[in-house]
Structures are given as structure tokens and as C-alpha cells.
Length: 127
Image 1 (cartoon, rainbow, N blue to C red):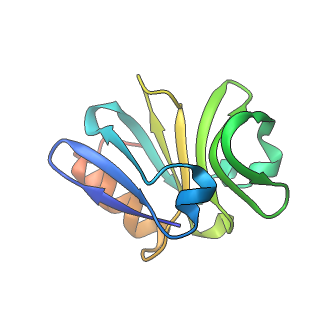
Image 2: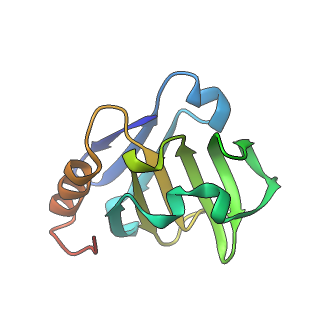
């Protein structure tokens, strides 16, 4: 699970607990100018349906259980930290090593996080 922190310039995804080991990261920092969209409970959170080359990624993938780290999907790479797709958001990004960040939130409803991020971006993203 993760928490989302927003600064004036960046969106910071802080990875918590054991997920740091599973994902092999403790945080991702994305400039707000690189965020192109954010959505609650995205289809991509059902990671078994989209991951095509888990062996090329960095992190942990257990089919039907969890995806944590970078995995290859049709069209690029996604950073996942998901066990329960109902508690997730997807953050679409440009000019980064991944095209999306799909994460399960630890202490916030997906709709609340989407609203906060959209507000930080000036409301110019899709839901």
C-alpha cells in the first residue's frame, strides 16, 4: 500500500511496509507537469489481465495475489503496488520510465486521492 504526497512541484508515491521490499522501492517522485491523468479503480488494477512479461520487471508478481514493482504490459511499463483493485488509483504519466502508476491506497479512498491530485493539477485531468 501507498500514500500520496503532493508538493508544489511533485507528486510523491510513498510505499509502505513490506511493499517496499516487494516493489524494491520506497518512493516514486513524479513532477506534476508529467502527470497527464488520474483515475479511481482503474481496469489496469486487475493486474492479471494486463501483465504480459512479469519476468522482465523489477519487483514481485504473484498471479491472483499481488503485483508490486515494474511490470511489462501491452504498450509499455506500469509500476504496480496492488493487492485489492477496489482501493486503487491509476496515475498516467509522460516522460518517465513508466507510462502509469497503479497503486493501492493505504489511508485514503481512491476518489479522495483523485480529487486531491486533480486539484493540484488545476483540474485538468480525466477521471
